[in-house]
Image (cartoon, rainbow, N blue to C red; front, side, top):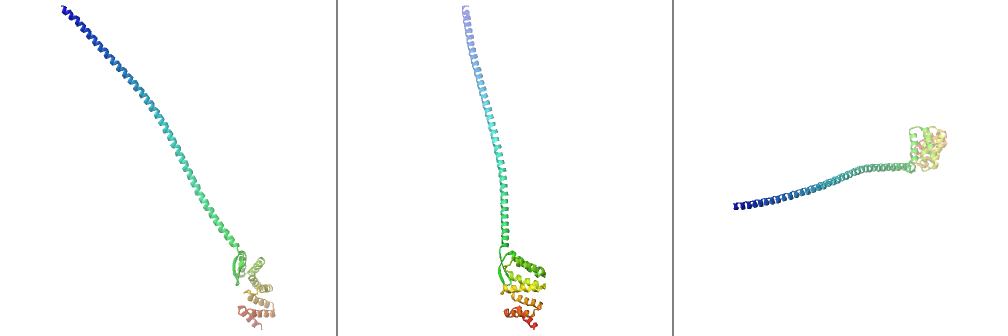
Length: 264
């Protein structure tokens, strides 16, 4: 019975000890779980903080990147606008340059044309060398033109108009190299209209002023004809003899010889 009680006491102690040990083990287990939970919670908090910080940093970086991208786009757009403006300006300048080149070419052409026109006008005003009735001399362009115009009227057979033209020429160009020839053709025009007196006077003037002129033999022969038309046979014979004496060998001399023969 004692053994049984002791056993019983011992058993109870053992049981109590076992229970205490189990309780200690249970407490230790509970303590470990709590620490783990706290560690996990702490880790979660830290992860949450890191995630928030990362998200904030990412958001900030994204915002900054978006702003930089927007700025870059604006800068690119501004640059593109500037390039377009420069292209437009260059095209405008190119157009102006081309127009300027055309204007310069037009001015140069006008200057050339004006220069040529001026040269032509000056050339028309400059004296020219002419040769008429065996004589060579300088004449003004207008002088040459007026003489040739008067001679053209004579050759058309309009002797009255030719007289007016040659008289006007002699009055306008009194010292002209054409003077002797103009007197000769004026006398012929007057002879053709039977104005023998004036014709004879102009032929005489030619002989007196230009005794070596190639038309002098013809002028003397014409004077003789005027004298014959005026019934001055004696004067005509004397003039014809002058042609033979001074201008032998000429056609006028041969004609004078024939007329002298008819007068005898």
